[in-house]
Image (cartoon, rainbow over all chains, first blue to last red; front, side, top):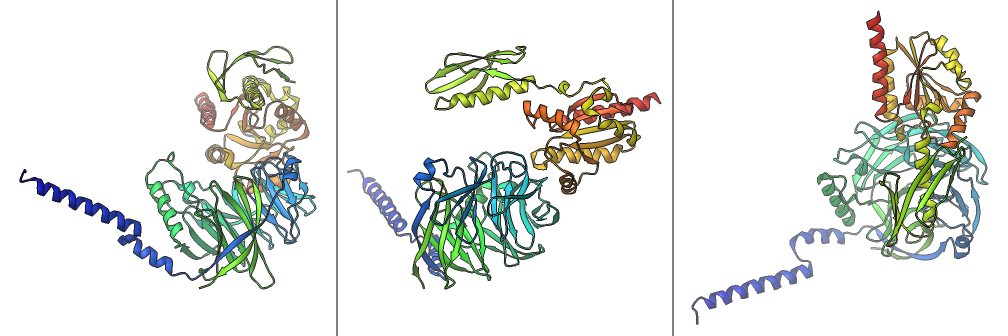
Length: 357
Length: 231
């Protein structure tokens, strides 16, 4: 026997033991980096509320008669159960009732007054509907029975828009320069009243400065969709606070995006959209996230997460917009979610289970 | 008026004709393994795609666009060297020449006026040019009244912070303008500059969009330079 052979065997044995131990610890997730995260996950201060699917529309009958949705990404509700959805196929608003039955269309494709071309955001106010008519570069106003009221032209292209009853439209232009304000405030006559908000410095200015906005309760909420950062502004545009959302999945996706930004090229993988849409309801803010599951996060005025409404996400599912409705007991009773993929439809969910801590 | 007649045959050759049969372009199409390839007269690849249902409609759109680009020429509007008074549809511009009292007048036709559609840089450059040379040249932007009204023009002027005057086209101009838009597209008829001398002679017609504005403004500066040299 070669005198070196026992040493060799001993080495192999050591390596095998090390590999087995490493695999074992990895499986148990007891490696030191996960400890802090696991502890953080345990500190749950919100309620997890599961969503149960009630109904989806448009139904087969409406789809077959040509009244289905196609590339619809935005919708609003009049508060009486009617849904107004901007449709990119017929360049109009499709109106459905609370039970998902198709009712009628508002407007048609074209560039004449009252016609639409690639409509985007729809905002339902008390007396009229505001549509961001992106193809015609204008904002159009319609009554709830479909009558065209007025429109005004836009010099800039706005990819995000919200409005309040007090006669202000908050619009987000494409972010191209670092000194450019994030939001323009327009009157209902189209005059730019003032602009506010400051973008962040990144290699790729445009995608990482893409924001979602929601106006309500005398405040304007801004969410950096690829960073998971929330800003709250007063109605006159002064910054009240900024908070980084600290959820595990948001931190992870944020770090992916920041790494991709540092890797310079615009032609690589692109950026993950963490926040799909934000909306206000009462004094609270609601965020729609698409990954790892479909969830709507309710954030209180103080910036704490109160509730998380969630449902399972199937492969390839992509959601773009949502509406929350309240029951008499001030609880969120129903949530309608606009799904883009795999089928373009609206899904209505009811809240069923509360796991309070 | 231009009318295009076309046939996409399942075979190989596609022939386009305009109503006067002046234009005759031959394209070749090849089918292979579920794909189609479209070649121009010189053999260059123009378009390709999947041979699925409705592909012929897409092809027609591609070819239609191509043909329109081939046919459209700025001389359809007016020719350099002519006088503005020779064109009835430009009658709106004639009195403006006298009002301005400047050596040159640059009219810019905007069929749509949108900063994010590439006009932002153009407006910025024109603003700078106007500030630098307002003694020699008057710049007047004209918006198509089919799409805009006076309130819109005032709004857009405020939103875009343009410093030179903007005005609406009259019915005479709009009717000709819209005929051409119907035949070609709004893109073809947007941001066209017509440089005129004070006497109404059309000195230059050209696009001001994109990088073409540099050439256009450069050639105007040449006129200024020539004038100084003559003096």
